[in-house]
Image (cartoon, rainbow, N blue to C red; front, side):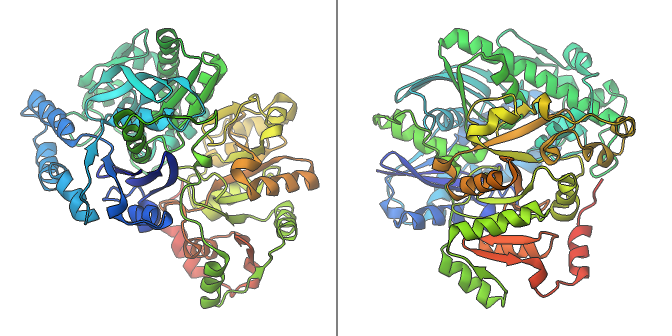
Length: 612
């Protein structure tokens, strides 16, 4: 039984393939087209999934799309009618796209795939999210919460999964949406909606929630079950081309921040305020869900489930015994969820995951063999060292990390989802006091306030962070233990109050300063040998030589580009940044041995982005 799941036409298009109940492959289209958040039909992702399984499209039994476009169109028309004549500009922009693509989606799928004779199924958006959360999880029974911007009508759902059965029990509907509330503040603070929310989350620790009362007294009401009611006069997303209205701007005494302009303390306080409100709603939703379902375990999906700070707060509250979060929690993961929903709900197959995480570390994308890589390097006339002895290879990498070198790490199958999880990562020594600054300014070319994540051996996570749970998908934030804190000097304390975020973010706050955020938090990824293989052995060797089981990890890309997929993507990124070492499977490349790239090329790369 082969089932192909698809998501497309909104953001983060993806494809996923399941064969006989096993997740075989999954990938976002952006990784192949190199268009960040590509929303086009996932032609190349489908091609990869089929090639990886050595099958053709005619071998697929079911093709499944992750939402129901006609139901979404119904919501769109009803909303425009409700707000008419306002929203005319938005209406005339949206309708041609719907008439050309989304209303004829079945035809579009057949046209894109070709030779398809078997059924095309459409699942509801939050059914797809819920299925992506529950079915790959290790739980036989679990409560399921999905929260995002909006699907067809639903903006959040509560469900219960038992064995192979998944039921949605409650939904919250448009226009009231916790995800759209967060996106409204993302827009208002000058970041891009549907991609900049994680920047807002990273900015929040610099501020104080001084606007919390304004939000709760004017914008929204949080009900006891975690659902929210929003005063839509403050928002513009129902009828306009922006997220917020003039009334919203008047409440906070300013127009939206212009993108790339200087961040102010007010922006930081706004971020902190909506973050706290989001956490409060999510915690209430979780408490209600526990009472409603009686389940001991929780599964999360939907774009809001990528808010790892809120996830960490839920874990700390101990509402549920265990939490599992879909690593591709946004629309990309809907492709996987749609396929799983058909497998179990429609076809009534039995489910037996033997208490295991069936997402396989979310390492579900392409991998490249030794001969493919060396052929590429030889064709580029690159000086490299092939080291087939893993111990020798890892020794050389650890030596470089100890010397403060930044390493591009390309190993195994590419990650599915927005996080680099040790397959397409940039890594370094978390103890290094300048590593965070170097990575942000000279490699990632991104905003200086953005934090980096620690990767820590699973068996050592409780020795450094106030968490003792699996976090293989980097979706839980925890605090660095006080025993690892460093006291700030009087000069440091003054810098910590500086509006120049570079001064604040680069203060040495702990024994692992490169991964310690300004509030002593860290977005933790736990590493184990079963899921992560060689990556685990690298960190273990780093611990053996340094005594520290923690390294810094960030995604292998620069600002504005998707995570690298191919060896060529990785090499180009390596050569146009200040990375020192590139590891392509068994091949290691040292920057100082290469022909020096022209400084003007690097400057051109950097100047493409305006950094604050």
